[in-house]
Image (cartoon, rainbow, N blue to C red; front, side, top):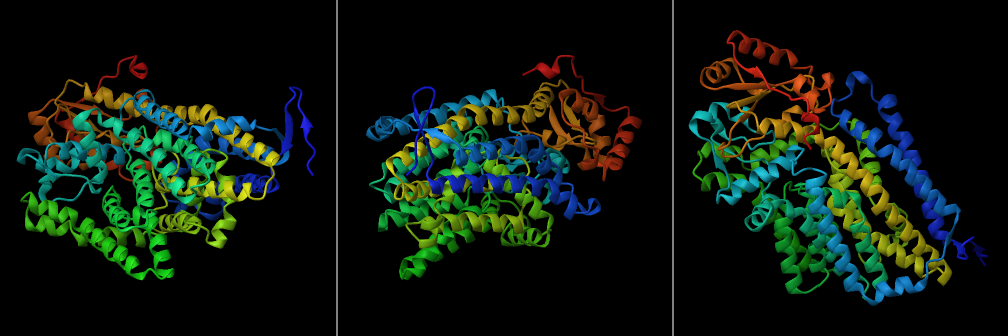
Length: 607
């Protein structure tokens, strides 16, 4: 029997339940080992001569943003495993259980308000990465009633220099649209018809909170406590909240995966039919791979349990869904009257070529990247999500409910990303697991139930205290810290983009030499209606430059301007073609063309 301890304030303190102590200590040790491995992997196992340049950003995020907080989280979890905690009064939990709708309404409102305010306060409405830029780029096209923006003939020779990267290759630069599938942009287009499209992700994040509560109620109709905990873990995830301030498709992945699961668990014709319809949308959000990896374990379960007609219905439906999205751009190009060659180049052949490129680009360097990605994912969640999810090992092992399918989806996604795309680029947390944060939270619900079935009332009182402390830390410590990290990283690009937008010349040419991600400052309206137009110097040839210099006034944005706005210098990332841009600048100098973009003394305080 555990002897309680009396605190100086008269509160009775107990050790947390044994299983939870062991899980917390195991998580703390795993995080510490992961940190040591992440610091050592690149140096020990990857020779510097063969180190891919993209390792830099992942390593930067790990060392500057994640490692210090991961150490703090590990110490906190270790403390949970060693120290005694004050017993949380049972009436506090009972108050939430008596008013679950109020609790969920409060969580939902907090998520919406946090997302909307953060969009403007943290990010100032400026998309940072190309994925974010292109989501709104495509939304503008869709709001116009088109699927592809035609490019005027005068700008077609410059189409590649005027466009962000990751564009669909259309012969002759005849049209603009990103290489991403359109559903996320479609959501933003629809919301933009009514209000600011920046509301899209906060609304979807709030929908995820409501939906995971509904899923959990279907899984555990007699365990309202576990349902509330699952919703709480989603609503207190820094990754969920800060990503909802952006236009990344990952918030939509989270919401639609949970809606799919809620419908699947209805287990009737209406539910399965609606789940397939949601699966159609979820598969077309931006990249085809993510939603099918979430769904696959559930289809395997149907087959293994003898429900083969239903399993075949899902298999055939998803085969048709995948074929449609693989062919989507070919269909769209033909519908808008582009050349037959352009449409054939953008169909299944284009998809297969991209997939083959990813497969053949596999490098064991990805192991170190994936370790840092997983650690980043842990850092950006509620700190107690991991130990509670670890307690679900018995339900997973025994095949209880859908615990095994949830964990398999996480494992499949990690394995697929390791093989195909271990580098996530920008992201707040590890965004390739974002659609499965609901799975992690539901596994934590399974862990809570497993714990309660073996624990005493006093044990559960201290488990509730651990839950309360972890959630308070998530909201009041980690969220502000992660928000500041995001703000500080984004602000130099936000200041630069704002200054470029207000430049008085006809054109602004971006010279990315020696700057980190300066090419992402190439941002134009998809219909090229706005001035100044922004071009990437790398993608202009001498004939282009001569023509532009003869017809337009031009400002140059280069290293001096980038450093003035706070963009980090990085000679290593651009040195392979710096000489190419230097020759083009020499051509402009001979033509007496282009002036350095002015940077006022107070540009760094614009925001």
